[in-house]
Image (spheres, rainbow, N blue to C red):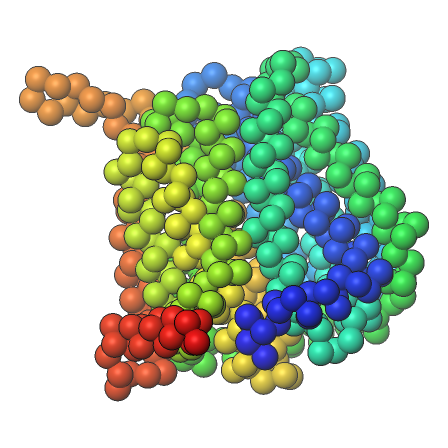
Length: 458
């Protein structure tokens, strides 16, 4: 089954008609909205506590690094812990905890009045919330197959991808941009209102799961630590010795690294365009609008072109968008360009998931999915943090060219570097994964697109 088939109207209608899954999907959407809004609001809140650009960049990146640490330290073992307890109880407990944590971030700042304490507690709360999210996600994933017929699992997974990376990031960006229009609350500015709204999304999730999706209760078979370590090693070994997967992993990590750099340096890039928090929120949302379009429309545009080739080309398309951002002077032009970056990343991600499902044997497929998803999340958050920090450190630099003294914009330099590196990564993936090496690429692309157009005319 192809991605386009799995997203047909009839398949979507059948999945959404199932009440337990529909409610769980609502919960997942709210939780994902909370995750993305928490990422924006917490990092912006920490940055707003400080005055110098370098300190703001370090605080922005530091909070995101703290959110990354649980995935580096505990990610592969989260599913083992989640299997030992009732899934519904795990999800409710985690969401109530995340409600308390995100609501406490602005509350602690207001009570203490100390900027250092506010930033420190934001980091602690973010770390703890991410530990909870690591338990929440596998509990939710383990529950989905029990709510659906087997033939519709792929449709449900595609719907989850679109919700996670196409819909809720856009909603989070709009909420964040909207709160920037509200009167400032304390030293955190718009981020304070966003944090309280974020906390309420998790409380709503806990209520829906606790009272409306009782079907997900139950325990999986408890896994032993030794078995888990052996399974992780087997999955890594399979990734390392399979050429197609090596190219796929490099390409996916490159695409997500480029997206992370765009997000991480976006606050400083927005200032170079003459904008502020609202521009930052719109660019952040535009990235994921493009991502959603890539997932939904991309397969129809490329027709029957080999998905291995589409993957490499999509990574390069995202990289071209990043290069264009580096030389763009206007927010109006930057918005479609950042959507182009998202579209390339979305098509690459969709092709990668499809190829894993088609090419990886069933006995290791779950581990491969888990490892790749963990690596892409780590790379995404790491590059967001690094880009924010580097952009802040370089924002005060100036360069003298003859009689002219001009500022050095670190965000644009990062975008330019990321774009050219992304082109190289996409080319590497295309060469490593190409399954039609005897057929010239331009002719293959032309035939795939024109044949699709001919079928539509008929």
